[in-house]
Picture 1 (cartoon, rainbow, N blue to C red):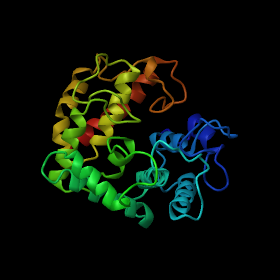
Picture 2 (cartoon, one colour):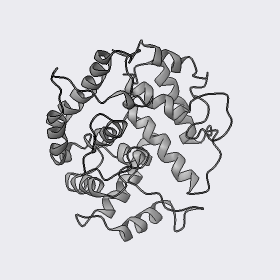
Picture 3 (cartoon, rainbow, N blue to C red):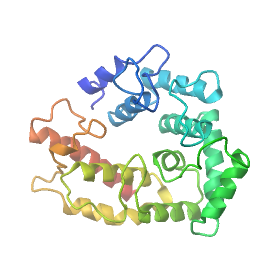
Length: 280
């Protein structure tokens, strides 16, 4: 219902002919675009855009070319981790957010599936096995930088539907109890509910829970979140995360948040969708 709104129109108007929006991952460098490709895709997905839409098709084609080596994302190669592994991870993740029928992205997902399955083979996370599997996959020693922590938006998003039941449950349990939450999404322990429901913090917490809710075998572990949401329904039978939830990532969805009713409608649509997925 939000695809024809001003937020989507403003983003689509900035898309370049080759399908990108400036830098892919970082805004720390000069480029003649106010948003990155990743930011654009995150917002458009929230606003209801799918692989059926031309702007997403162009973006996926661009990302596939980058993943296959026909193109290169324009970002400066970061030195804090192995850039080739990192860039393949972010590209494959965003392709798989919109389609699971892409050979290049699925190849990367299969590599990460093997690593995570090996790391959780004993039913709990074994960091030594993670390091061993990581290095076996990409070589004895990654070419620069540190090994990538898998508890971030990218592997957690990319691996949905890839793991067997036992591994999926063990992974979700580990992520819920990890201090620092899911990197790039929410930076606190997910097993602990936010102190304030009407807050930006709560909105980002829900962003992390939405990722975990995509793990079908482990959804029952999120029942405490469903109960928390139900307890925070207001007297109108709706939900309101408050004005500060307007972070230009998850909200707003509607064009105008000056009216409380519009804000409530956006929050209720999002939370209702999450509750439905948790109940499936």
